[in-house]
Image (cartoon, rainbow, N blue to C red; front, side):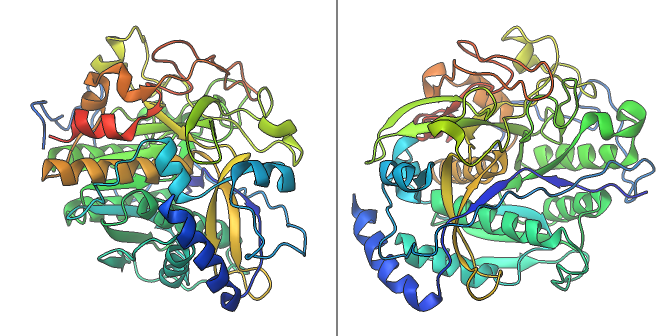
Length: 461
């Protein structure tokens, strides 16, 4: 049986408005907008503790993935020209904060002098979105961003027909595509974007899409907002699908391509009652991104962060229900890499870094494929929000360096602790025992969330 990738993304509907109403909102947003190897030895095919790799294109032991979007319709009287863009106003109106690209860039100290020019971000998703190019353009109009220099879509296995009635998961993948493309662009608006669309969400099909991106050197950094709980992978690491994916990451590291993946949205257990890391974030050749609740002032001044966990630390009274919690757990497939062992870890843990992920501290994302009366801005959360934004930061570092950054983890772990916001409050116990945040490196949030300017200074050379 073929395996399937699960998305790590949550969304809540905010507004439904026609394209003609966007212009008024765009004017308001425009006004607000003003407010490599680096000396490291690259891994060989046996990287990851002596594991062997295979070039198989099909799976002999299926791991299964699904899509679980969360939707909350906003009040009918909400209109774009009256929509409150300040986080405090959103909390008062909706019970959750709303963050624009300008606010996120400010809070995470993204330098305005860098845009990602000359670098290319690769987004890998299944099915894609029938309106992604126009949706990105609309997103840019709303928030006063330039269109990317180049935005291309590649279909390694053929172009799928968007038919959510036949394939119920396609809507979720289209949502994910919008989130990934729009928010990687929000962080690195001058970078080129290549969207690699797998024909379906079979694990082997998505792995082949990554393989294609690496073999054809489509870009400098690859973002993956999907994963599979390790417990669902048969053979405890011997699954051909898993081996194929790992071989892709070996090839990426040797080609100087950075690879990121989200660490999961269901706590340390990722749906299990025991701690259960998410793959491919658990692969030591991949930079896994955990999740936080990011708090900031109405002008984008960073305040603090806690581990994203709606059950134990939900912001703003959690009035719309429980959505999820950050992944991050020890791997049973990979031994501890040296860069984590140096910090006291005894096993490979799947969150190397972290980023805002809570639906209650959400980012605004435009969807244009849902149909009349439904298209518009939506609140999004999940660790898949963080992976593409970290990819944007890597693109900025690549611009400063003048070349791709390459295998990322050793460089991040060698960076000064001051390059990260240390997350010390909260845990990711969400149906499994989970882990608590501590000072310094920890399981739910890794090294912490980025001070982008300092991260770029540390790795962008």
